[in-house]
Image 1: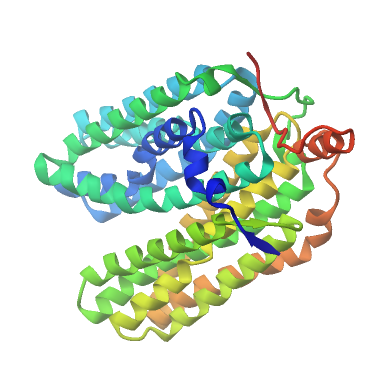
Image 2 (image 1 turned 90 degrees about the vertical axis):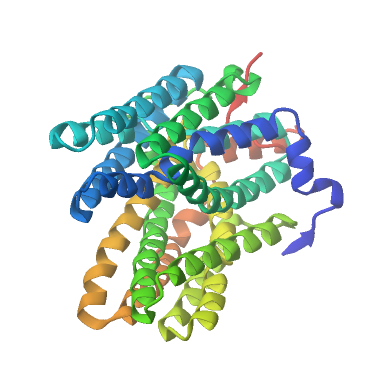
Length: 426
């Protein structure tokens, strides 16, 4: 069930909260190097005369290193606080890309070491921001709306980021663009960690356990589902390239990706404009099912105009599904592991996307462009089936020691309704 959010409770209300706009802008800027990393590496390698195979290898190394580093750094943030981890990580990541920009691809072991350094130390700003929202915004409904705003802002970043990179390349060179983008990333991380909420944030006490956030069955179920959501999205990016090649118009690819981003933007805005009641786990199943259903018409591969419209439709439920997933993560993450839990979601989604891209290629070569889009539909449907099969685990009351259980207990004791996932100490 949903109701219209009051005018004073919309996105402007979130952005007017002390520190909120700075934290969101700083996080987006800090994540810019990772958002445009694959494109930046491709342009850099090709400018130096390297092959697409080399570019793909460096991108793969960067992606794997990022996937490994995110949950590890997320756990470090939960243990040590944000400034002591986020800023050094941002600097080391930028140094890795700087090393690549200055030394080029003449010595391949050094080039691979540079991108692994950059990926491994990509700061977990995304998970860090979601850990800060409860302390900054207080009320649960405002935090949930901030999650939706976060998902919308991601779509804007993934649309504007490549445009900014292209502008920098046209003004100077891919190497210069690589340096500027990573400098901006450090400045973004600096803006976040110097803010009062980041400096004073402390994770809730956590139980020592080698599995960390992964000891939560509900979180594992969610990660399993969003691996396949990522797989679906990754396959679309490759299938869209094949579709553009089939039509003999490379620019169509850009239009399809922009349309997908526009759909996600529109869906996220609509989702965040409402207050949702009921269990978020049940709502997430519906959103993922709708996401999968909207992927299926892509296999029709009509003309460019109609295909652009289908791409808009395919993106409509992406941002809402992500925003709802953020709520579910917060409910199921063991106490003291919130940054790590969100970082696992980022990692799982990213790995799924990479494997989706890898799976779409052979599918297209064997059975044509339609099969590439069929991978996306199949991924979405499997994600829904995972959520359906694990409904009992996801629908179980939050276990003692989780943020949601703490919040439920506080409300039952007469405390005001709020999100208690982590705390700000002053």
